[in-house]
Image 1 (cartoon, one colour):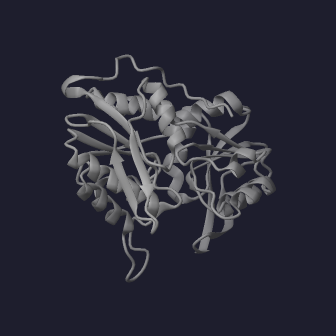
Image 2: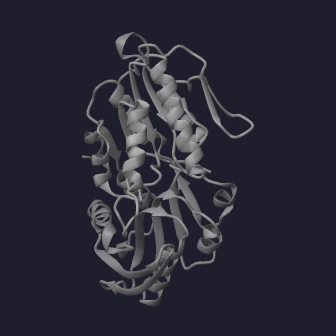
Image 3: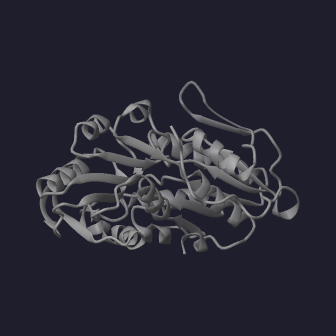
Length: 331
C-alpha cells in the first residue's frame, strides 16, 4: 500500500553527537510507523527489549547507552490501550533512570482522550489521569497528533505539541478526489473547527450533520445544515471507532442528494465490526492515517485507504531536537 506525504526531507542534519544528540525508540504498538519515522530522519531505531513475563507484567531493557541523549519514544496508546500505556510509562522510567537528558513521548494516537471531562455524576476525567501518569513517569515533553479536544494540552504540566493532520488531508484530497462541486462536511457540531480548517485550505463550502447520540457508540442523524445537492462531500473527523456515526452521516448525505460521500479520519480505531460496516456503507472511500497500526482487515478493505504520518512526525521530531519551530509546519 502506497503511503504519501508532502513534507520535505529535513533541511538540517539530525543531531547525532554532543549535547544535542538524539535517539529514537519504539514500543510495540506501532513499530512500522516508528521505522518509517526513522527512515525519514535517517536514524535507526534504538535497541530496546519490551517483553512480557508469564503473568503479562511488562519488562523493558534499554540495550544501548542513552546517558545525556535527547530521547524520543514513539508509542500510540491504541488497542490494547492499557498494555501499550504501561509499555510507554515503563520505557520512560527506564530512560529516566538511564540518565537520558530529555525524554519526549511521541503519541501519534493519545488514548483516553475522549474522557476529557465529567460526562455525568461520579465519573472520571481519565485523560487528565493519563497525562499525570506520563508526566510522573519522567517525560519532559509530549508530542501527539489531532487530540480529540485541544484543551487536553492543558492537562500536561510539561510542554505539549499537538500536531495537525489537516495539511496532509488537504494534500491527499487534491491528489485523489474529484474537486468539482466539493463540499466539506463536519459529522457533528463539535467538529466544525476542524472541518472549517480543511474547507479553507480547499476553498470549499462547509456543511454540518446535526445528530443526536442516545448512548455511547450509537447515533441518529437528525438533519443536515447546508445544501449538499449535487456535491462531492468530504467528511472529516479525528476518530472513527464503531463507524456508526460516519455511516449514518454518509447515508444521510446521499439521501439528501449528494453525488458522493468520502471521509478522512485521523485515528482509525475501527473496533468490533467497524470495517465490515464501512465496507457495506454508502461511503465511496474512507481514508485514515497510520497513527494506529492498520489491521489486516483494514488493509484488505476495498474502500479504506491509509496515508502515512511518518514524514510529519519525523519533521516535528527533527525540529524539536534542533530547537526549531514546530508550529511553522502548519502555516
